[in-house]
Image (cartoon, rainbow, N blue to C red; front, side, top):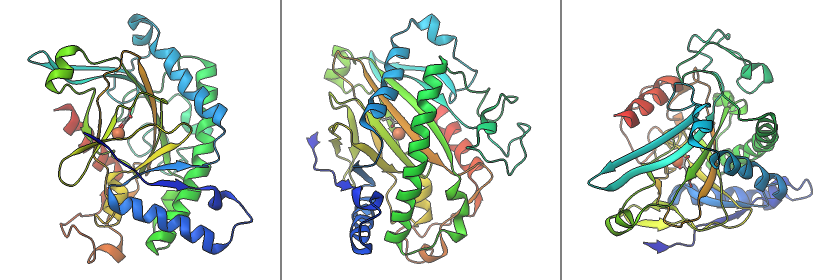
Length: 328
Ligand SMILES: O=C(O)CCC(=O)C(=O)O
Ligand SMILES: [Fe+2]
């Protein structure tokens, strides 16, 4: 296990209306380089007020401090939305040990009563609907929790549009062919971790099992310490992602990797939390709407690292397959 100097991308130039095209290109180049390496980087000067950055994580911390009984009230018969508790132990060692609460827009192409072209990020999209492919509707712990989360989402969606601009500049493509990217589905998943026990620490217990995120890109807001997130390199070695206060950790998901024929790496990551201080993180997943067709972009079908066939399919089919895979 080593500490690793992950790239730090200063996004200030992208957000500053006075910066030159060259300054913006330099940022786009830094994003491109990081995505090709292991698909992960810190983003600083991202424009989200520090106070909000901490306040939204604090909502999660207060929620996870509630009794199990209180938290269970937010279970919504889904492994994705609402409150979830995972504990998988084999021979006294944890393979998975975390809890979470997730908020997902309705799956608009899967018979939840919304028209297929409903804007998944419009306020209407979060009105109560019948259960959809991800389970029942969101269950917010409080109005304050919801208002803070929505304030944070608004900032993230703005940031996503800028980052998307940097990504397409870095890749030398246009977004025209993928217009869903301008109205993505944004989901929030708060994660809570208690310390792994002594046997876990001695025998390699895991808090959150190794995975790549299913969507396009993830913005992670992690506790300032201690370090528990780890990323796997191409040789199978794990490296710690030390928290940098106020920095977002950005990582590539499987769809952005698929877009680029594997030139951008879907970051393999996991969490091992050993400190007695509980840890909270907030993952914001930028995803295509479920009815968007995802496939490798024409530019990369012959230049991508992976020449395997990826027939175009709706994102919904892709992500539900991935969820089914986890559930095995
Ligand atoms: O807690 C973390 O640092 C990572 C969380 C994560 O990987 C996820 O929610 O997908
Ligand atoms: Fe993840």
